[in-house]
Image 1 (spheres, rainbow, N blue to C red):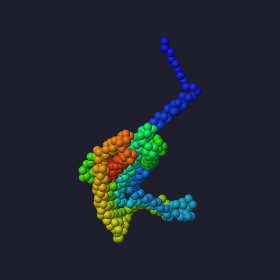
Image 2: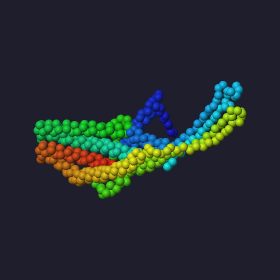
Image 3: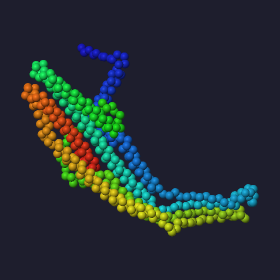
Image 4: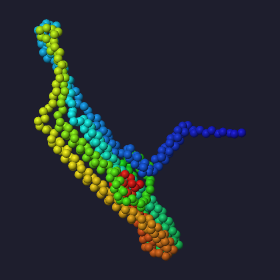
Length: 431
């Protein structure tokens, strides 16, 4: 025999429990740390400055429509000759009225519309490249804030680990004090030094919260700071490609350089447009006229006429614009050369910075970190057994903290320098 027991929450507590479960699930999701790719995706989707600049590109795209518009035709209707009072009788007030309707159209020569459209399209390309350049620079700012957050987390973890280790030393020293192995003043000095570890933790907490604030601002995110977290590799890679490889990648990828090259093409188009605007545009007209008969009603004449009008180009009123656009081509050529030189300078300087950070980090990872840990543990063991002085013990603790903190700061500097190299090249070449 099987007995089934059914339990029901009293009253309406079931919906309250369900609400708590939903909130707990939401809180757990909010606690999930974001990776660099997730942070970057959120930034590109939500940053207001980047979105506003993207709308500027859309505005340039809309101007292409305006640039390719045809001139509107003209229609005129004229009525003349109506006599009041009518001399032909009271029921024929418009018998002597002359009507004329005219249709005219301005014809643009020398492909003016096509050149205006071409210039507008090139302007859109330039705007799109400049938008990509803004994205490039802001991604570097985002990457720096992300790295600062990772560095602040690493420093905070290090400070907490140092405090935990030091608390164990205090407990051991307290036991030694009770056993009479050390003097009270030595124990007081050891315990007094704990305030430095507490201060380091508080400083690390402030730095971490400050880095999170900057990151949340870039993401345009209102998530509470305690529910926002990021995660990623906080390490370095000692492999670097040859400098010339990064130079070639930068020449092909840098959007600001692409915008400079595109500006040259637009200036050439603008010069062609200036030459075309110097040409005269004819206006074609056709009209229909009704000429009334003043003597015999109903015997008026209908005539059709054509005309062709073109301005006399005695003075070239566009010669200044022709000269300006021609000079603008040379100017943009020089600006492009300056942009290309800036690309090489950016790549070279950031490459050297990354190389320098790698040269500093290698001995730390291969030797100094283990050496500092070994010295600290050895001196601590010796001090606990009376083989080392208090000053040796405190110095070993200080040296260990300095080495560990310096290594964390060097990792942060390396990651920022790697971001600088990515910025100089125009795309991520170092993750």
